Structure formats: C-alpha cells, structure tokens
Length: 131
Image (cartoon, rainbow, N blue to C red; front, side, top):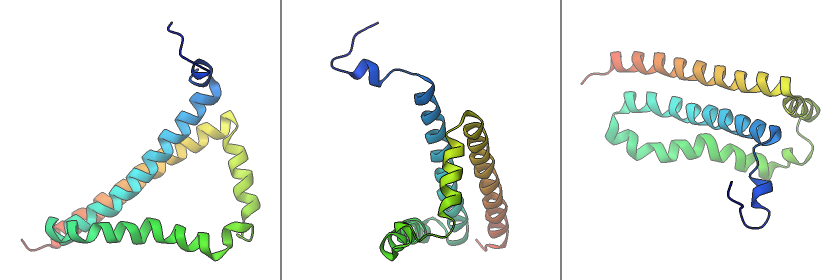
C-alpha cells in the first residue's frame, strides 16, 4: 500500500461509516437525477427539442431552485417548520444500519416509480403530438 501524505490515509479509509455515507449519497443522487429526468423527458416529447432546449433551464430553476430559495428566506427552516421532529427522527433512523437499507431501497423504488410515471406520460404526449 502507498502511504498518502498527511492524514489522507485515515480520511480515505473505507470503513462502515464511509461506505454507508457513500451508499446514501449514491441513492440520493440517483433519486434527484431521476426526478430531473422525469421532468425533462415529457417536456421534450411535448414541445420538441428546439422549444424544450430554450425553456428547460427556466423550468428546472423554477421547479428545483426557487422553492429552496423561498423556503430559506421564509424563516420556515429556522425551526418553525411543521413536522421538524418527525424529520429529525427519520434522519436519526436513517443513520442506523436498518434505516440505511430501508432509506436506500425506498429511494431506488421512488426513482423507478417516478421514471415509470414519466415514461407513461411521455408516451401519451408523444402519441398525441402531430409531427
């Protein structure tokens, strides 16, 4: 094994905590990417590539960025968010090995369901489109 400079060897060690974080981050990125793709695909089928390419940046910002900005500026995230205790309990549950498996499986299942709904909607939009 090659020794890395400084404390990099300790930081980059693949232990249980690191692998759990990698599994959660990977499935969360899969869920977010699938959600974006499920929004983009029907728009392409409905509007066509030229119009969709022009409108998609605006649509993505409106759907995914503006809600975060509004929530951040509204003060809801400062402790007044309804259900904050349930969210904290769920996040604590996800840190357990059983919760990690349930959370990762749930995110993969949600990504598959979102993509399936998007595919069905895209096919319906494509069938009604006049070329």
